[in-house]
Amino acid sequence: MADQPLELIERAMVAVRRSQTRRTLSLAAGVTSAGFDVLDVVEAAEQSGTPATVAAVAEALAVDQPRASKLVATAVQVGLVRRQADQTDGRRSFLVLTEEGRTAVAEISRFRRDVFAAAMRDWPESDRAEFARLLHRFVSALPARPSPTNDHAP
Image (tube, rainbow, N blue to C red; front, side, top):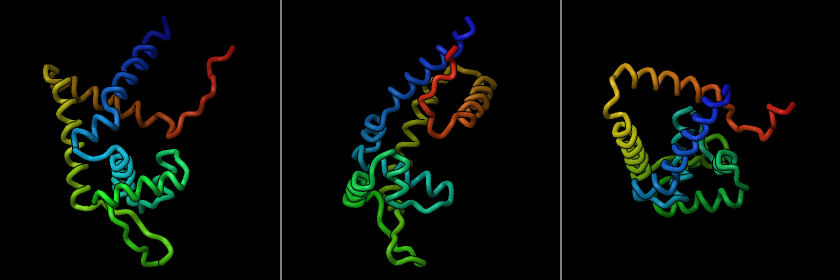
């Protein structure tokens, strides 16, 4: 039964993914799911200190450039992000969160934390801390984009 922990982890991760869908989170924050996708990318870029561009959105969401442009246009249209001219290259623009976008990001984060807090309501603080430590360690070890290889072939 060496694979049992892996099966339990897999089931748990799938359950988390299903319960934390973009649609669920975007509805909680009152934003379109297309806007949510762009918000997620722009927020991550800001956190990492790198500029967000349409190309970055395309790469992060694994979509082609025309689809990313449409997603960005929607996010701009509903006021979640704005385009800002690159001062060093006038042909390029960066995507920046608007105040409405920052509010939506904060609302999504608050919603997630409320869900997590409710799930761990009866946990002792030491269990919460240990879970946070182990989950961070686990996620840090995951590849950015898993490849569909079969590492268990005979």
